[in-house]
Image (tube, rainbow, N blue to C red; front, side, top):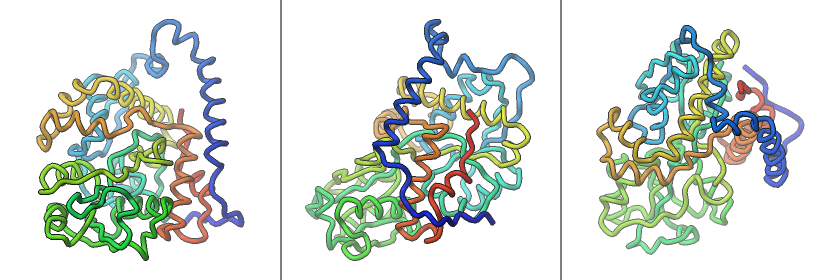
Length: 351
């Protein structure tokens, strides 16, 4: 098991320092990419692999997750193939531990998941590396209007419904509330309900708000009498430029075929960027993979995501360290875990 302990116990670099560094990197990248951009091409597209035998990649995803639409885009529009990959999409609905184990043991080459679900299992030492971020958003905290919950401060002394005490939304919004003046342990009561009963629990007055992922939160808003108001999302406040879903690969793929890992990251960044500017077309593509949501609902949900935010390289490493610090303070990660050392171990730069 990897030892993440370190004598230093401080949050990763300040957001000001991180912003300065991102600006410098962006300026350097712009200069380096200038010859490509002047030709009217896309820098990601220009880096595509030359025509040759496609490298097979088994990619596990949950095809009912609307936030993963650009993965379908990459498959249907040929973006994967353009970058030299023959991607087999595996619809996976098992637990996070099982998913990471499938990567670590080579049953799948790559997978996508919520960083909030991956942080704790990766601390255990799975042979899995995070190579790219995909987007922000897809978790929301919504207040029940009849309970007069319209802002975060109104939640003091109230109950929030969640699908489980270890659910990503419960962990994330515990951190978020604490940072915004609400003690998630002393001033909030967390109550667990099956997802399809959260709206009913609000109607009955048993809870006053719901913390959930979309599209569940979206459906609760739509179907519950009295209505809800959004209080926050995982793209609110200091998290407006933080990633939610990430791509991980088995350590073996990085060691044995790093170019394939790089091509996968490059393909997904291109697909997410394309989807951010082509909402209608993306929704139509995704309807081939799911019947859970009508077209117009899909397009509405896309607007809640930061599809243009897909960090790689040092930016992604810093975001992992930021979340690790949050989860350490919450008690999810071990008290002795050093966030920077942890991020350096679970992240690998392939681009």
